[in-house]
Length: 201
Image (cartoon, rainbow, N blue to C red; front, side, top):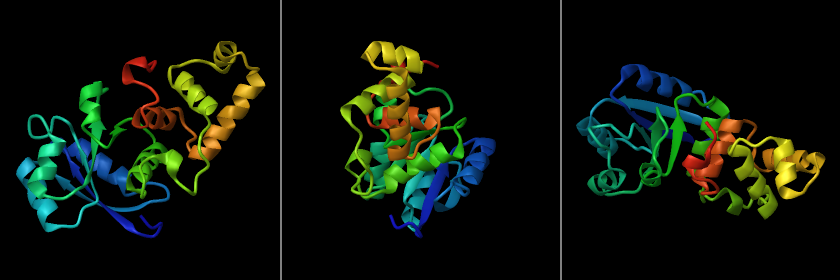
């Protein structure tokens, strides 16, 4: 996606409060331009997808009873990115059905980072030619950070100095352009570095 290109996002959620709140946030994501449409029923979602250009559907996994991403793709007969709305933590099987997820409690930079990764030409951040790849040590540190370990605990576990761990963490933030714990957690989950059950809530 070009930097100046506007994203077309559908928010599929039965609760008008959550739907309006997400739409408000999605239109104000840093570094991204987006236009949102809110739909409140499954038939409306299908009609909207067939009649308007859409890049992403952000949907509650309970939308329409039990939402099935693959079924939606078959009905509309084209590929589209589908992001789950996390009102409460999703189990691993449910999460695997979606291209990504956004939590109703995460900050705007983290939400923007999730959507930016999904709309790039390659959803694997490490293979982005404009972004320096993570080392195996940096990936290891990410998994320990999102599991709730302190810098000292990570240093002890990996037989490193605290200064080295802090340097790795600065490099991770610079490479991924992620500066919040929530954003780092989402990155780790989306890129299969850590399982949801391993994360310290």
